[in-house]
Amino acid sequence: MTIKENTATKFLEETDSLVYAEESCSLIVWNDEVNTFEWVIETLMDVCGHTEEQAEQCSLLIHHKGKYAVKEGSYDVLKPMCDAITERGISATIEVVAQ
Image (cartoon, rainbow, N blue to C red; front, side, top):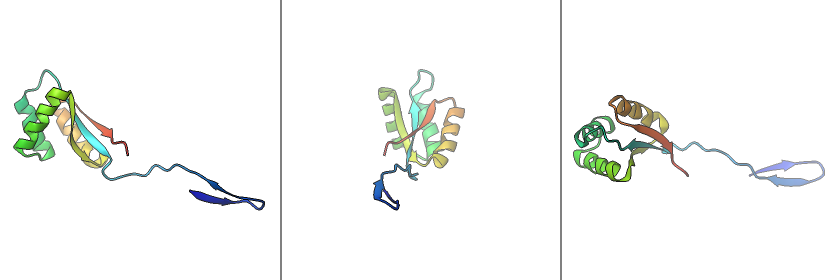
């Protein structure tokens, strides 16, 4: 909120600000009927640094829910991961997390 001064009156003006948060995005991997569980698990381990157990759990959630946020972080960190996943033939997107 900012205070604006006028010679005759003083008033408050509300302003909205978009604040960039470091951890404001999710890396979403989408289910498909093409890629195997093994390929998705290997990709999540290689690209996202998941343990085998984490990657297995993510792949099951992707399969059953249709998509799953496999990683949270800033856009700059997630973008190369998203590109690496899509280069392997797996659908992935980055979504902004509502704050």
